[in-house]
Amino acid sequence: MYQETILDNGLRLITSNMPHTRSVSVAFFIGTGSRYETDDQAGISHFIEHLCFKGTTRRPTAREVSGAIEGVGGLLNGGTDKELTLYWCKVAHTHCALALDVLTDMLLSSRFDPEDIEKERQVIIEEINMCKDSPSQEVSILIDELLWPGHPLGRDIAGNKESVTSITRDMMLDYLSHQYQPGNILLSITGDIRHQDMVDTISKTLGRLNNRQPRHEYLTYQEKPGDRLRIETRDTEQVQLCLALPGISLVHPRRFALGLLNTVLGEGMSGRLFTEIRDNLGLAYSINSYVDHFHDTGSMTVSAGVELKNLKPAIKAILEELAKLRETVIPEAELSKAKELSKGRLLLRMEDSRSVAAWLGGQGILTGRIFSVDEVISIIDTITADELQNLAREILTGKQLRLAVVGPVPQDEPLEDLLKI
Image (cartoon, rainbow, N blue to C red; front, side):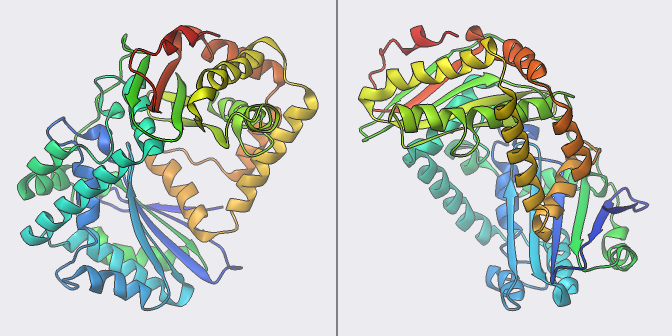
């Protein structure tokens, strides 16, 4: 499925040849994100990612950076998460060299011009304001604070206005020198390419990088008591809610089982939550569940938007669905359908060069162990209904429930009394 070469300086290059496609996707994965930041640095990973698009020594303006790729019909973007930062580009295969040139130029030669920094500081503050104004985004931030209280995992990836205002150019360059090291970078290239050609090209540019500074490590999460309920009162038409439980880590052997359990619960329009809460009870328009996995922890979350009068009935109905997973073995037909959904969605993703690059690079930078699609399908096929029920009994416990709501809900609303399974 892929070939891998580790350069002498530790940078990992992974390629996958996809001769049937006319696109090439190039993705740089950096093993750093918001959980690697101190409180004073909150948002610095995200700030740096923004500035890498604002100009380099060879392409001094943001327009020249983006125009180089868009001028050939390509796509260029990036993203910051809690444990990784990503820069990616997708182009027609004839422009692979250009994509590599632009992305390596951004990583090696971004200007971090003081004027650009001040402009982007205001842009990020507006981004934070935008998220605050969006109840569905705000509630997801609040539930993270409940899941990981007092820990970087519980912070907004973008930081806060105070931290973003105080981040300096010197702080960014110091953070870069520690985190953007070749030993902490994985380059994933997929499409109609040859591995050795990519090795030769990358060796000439990134091969000269050295690990200059020791890498900053993340703060390990230690579970501790905290609040179970957060209410943010707003004058809105709907109440946005997140009901969450601690999950399991990125390397836990049962993470695939938890993913399948989540598929049964809230994946798609045939999941239990959509079928019961929306179709049968009519309590919500939008409802789903999702899982997050990190190096040493994780979560399982149900997200929904409901009218105020439907808030308590919706919470009770969601908890009843969680209780059913604990108390009743999933019927074989339903389990089979969930497996086919999971496998089918995975296989469909693999038709796209960008998705393949993300599949390889994300696993490689976060765990160092890349499962093939066939390996994952084989694991899913072996999961039993008894295994899922045992996992549900372990994870879906009332004392671990957290609830965040944003909407026209009084601060003293006794919602915590509902948090029982």
